Length: 191
Image (cartoon, rainbow, N blue to C red; front, side, top):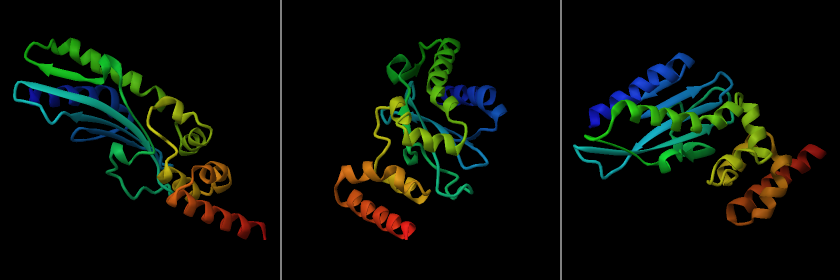
């Protein structure tokens, strides 16, 4: 079943992603644009898989860094500022000896199309930043998007005024230190 699983994701990659300049590494499909906007699809296998059955999940995300020239070209889905998991078929995909391979492949393609709907809304790094700032990104996931790391990234990108009220309202050790940085930055730029 492991070989069939690998074959299915390779076929899907070659047909639907490779023509659009995505790269495949193991169970990850990555797209890196020239402006530093990065997208990833990750096939996460269950640790309970056997020789006769493979269960997996499909995770996806969007990742940026402060500079357009990417330092972490092998970023993972869990590194992303925006993360989600497909929900088609309840988000759990199981491949075993009874599976109709062609039907199964079609279901995975449907799940990937659903997953990439948000990807279609965000084609540049600037669009992604706007989506983070205006709350649009949060509407497409159940995970918290504006956590400390994302806020710190936005600060590093120069959006400190836009995140100030949010960061100040969060409180806590890390957000308080970021609030102080923002206030210092605003005082220095107003002089």
